[in-house]
Image 1: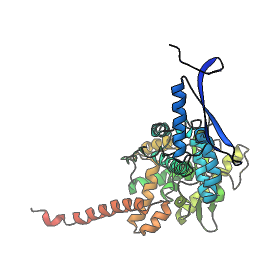
Image 2: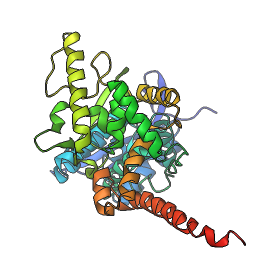
Image 3: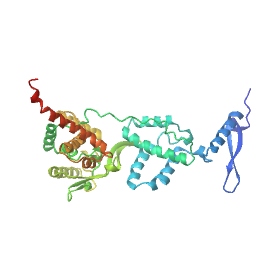
Image 4: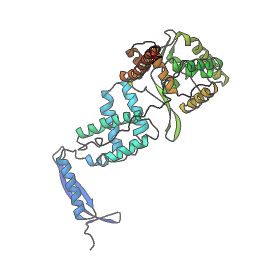
Amino acid sequence: MAKKTNIEINGSNYFRVTATIGKDNSGKPIRKQFYGDSKKEAEAKRDEFILNLSKGLSINFDKALFGLAFKSWFDNVLRPSISLSSYNRYEMDYRIRIKDSSLSQMKLIDIKSIHIQGFYNDLLKSYTVNTVKLTHKLLNNFFNYCVRADLIIKSPMYAVELPKEEKTTATNKAISDTDIEKLVQAAKDDIENFIFIFAIFTGMRQGEILSLCHSDIDFAENTITVNKSVKFLTVDGVYQPVLSQTKTGYSTRTIPIMNEILAPLKAYIRYEKEKHLGLSIPFGANNTLFTSKACTYREAANIRKILIRLCRKIDIEETTFHSLRHTFCTLLAKNNVPLKTASELMGHSDIGITAKIYTHVDMDEKRKGIQKLSAYLEKF
C-alpha cells in the first residue's frame, strides 16, 4: 500500500508536520516544519527535535555547520582570549588542517567520534603525532564550547583515541665525538655542510633553522632569535613552504652563538651573498639564511638526503637532523650545564623531555665509573 503523503517537492512526495518550537523576541510563535517519507517518520523527527530543545539546545542547533560555527568561535571567542603568538599558532593549525577538512560541511549535530577519528587518521598521513595532538586540543576546546553554548548535548571528543607517541628510533641519538670531528672537517672542506655544524652547536629544530633570516642573527650580541619554523605543505593544491610560529611558546627563545662558530657563520653568510648576487637576486636582512641553489627555502627531505650522503662519504654512522639536535643536548649534559638552562636552550615545553636525555648521559657516566673498578676482579 502506498505511503500517505501531503506535499510534493521537486517531483517527490513527502509527509509534512508542523510544530511550534518557541517564540521570537516579539512574542510571536516560531513554527518549524518536519518532513519524512511517511507521517510516522516526520513525526519522529519532530519529536526528536523537541526533545533536544527540552535538553537545552538552541532553536537553530540543527542548522549549525561545523565550518561556519568553528570560524565564528575562532574569531569571536578564542582570538580575544589568547595572546597574539598563540593566535598565530592556532590560526596556522586552523587554516592548514581544519578549514577545508572533511568536517567542514558537516552539521555539528551529525559529527560523531568516528568522524573525528577518521579525520585524525588522514592527518597522520602527512603530519606527526604531536601535530595531531595540537589539532586535537583546538577541536576539544571548540566542542566543549558548543556544549556550553547549547549547540550540542555531548562533545564527540570523549570517545576519540589519540594516536600514540612515535617511538624514538635508533638514529635519534647523539653522534660520537669522532663523528662530530669528521662533520666539522667536512664543513671546512665544503661550506655547504656548515648547516650540520650549526645544528649541532645551536640545538635548533630543522624547521627553525630552515626558516632563519639574516635579521635573526645579531652579531652585536652574538645571539640567534628563534621565533618561527618552516615546513613544505600542499596548500590549495600547491606544494610550497609555509611559515608558522615555533612549535610551542617555549620554543621562542634566544640562543647565544658560540665564539668558535662565529667565523664560519660569517663565511657562510658571504657564500650566501655571492650566491644571490650570482643569480641577480637582491640580498638583504630579510633573506633566508640557509637557501637552496636557487636561493629559495630548502626542503627538509632534501636536507635529509644530503646528510645521509655526507655520512657515507666521510665514513660515519648514518644519522638524522634530529640526532644533531639531540647531540647538542647531550653535550650540554656532559659538560654539566644546569638542566633548566639546557631545557630553555632546547626550547622544550616540558623540562622532563630534557631530563630524559640528561638521565641517559648520567647513566653512561655511571657505567664508565663502575667499569674503572674492573681491575679488582681480574683474578675472579
